[in-house]
Length: 376
Image (cartoon, rainbow, N blue to C red; front, side, top):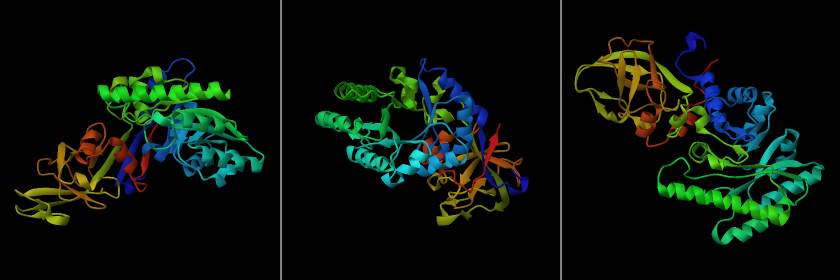
């Protein structure tokens, strides 16, 4: 990055992503595939760059949320299999097929629509079936009294023409959370998933080549659920409560600079809403980062950032493009100095806790105007 353009930027460690991939891969049973989740611009890390790394490292599949994300990868030369986890309107079936993109099917009506669209083209669409086993989001409903109806709808789906039913999957709701209740819920989801597969394969004669349900939490805590493929998301990027069990490394460092330093007398109010008042003569720094860059406004007056010489408490309401920090006790910090908003020195969990959210949201919230700088 041109030094003249330095304002706020995100440093992405590709070696750390590769380390995490290899550490996770080493846990997999023989023959188990690795699907790298690169939706939401690879959780803010850059989908194209991360996908290129995973492709060169030997990963088997990628997952994105929508067609636009899949096409971005294809347009940048990524040739490995891509699974769309969300919905794609059936009128884009030809685009899916021509770009060799695998589509999730989450209901019988959608299966029929894709089948008809592919049939009209005289082509075949590769698909993965999604089961709702307790996430209560997308997927064929198959729990409790809906078991028989769910199995029947699946059996009707897998025999439809012009659809290649390559895989079947579900998503765990609490596999990354501790406690007996969470463990029991995850195990119940897994049993329902395998019971449905057994019933559908027995009744229809269909065989799913790829069964997958192990997300980040399950990869670490439930290795028996890895089956034919795993889907680590945040784990790949070195975040989450379970990442420490595998010695994984965080891969993003969000950095800004001090643009101005001013001195204020006691009793001076700071920023919108006058929610902070100086109690002493204060050396106040203005950072070139705000909520438009991904710094949550909810963190105002609750966090400190890593500056030269120590930690600088954030003061006043965080603005759209700027925020203020108290540098009174940090004489080494000067205009142009780097300040780490989160990274190896300033743990992202401190920021996410202050924002009453999770690290996922902060990573994805780093906006497009923040340049990504890649360490090879």
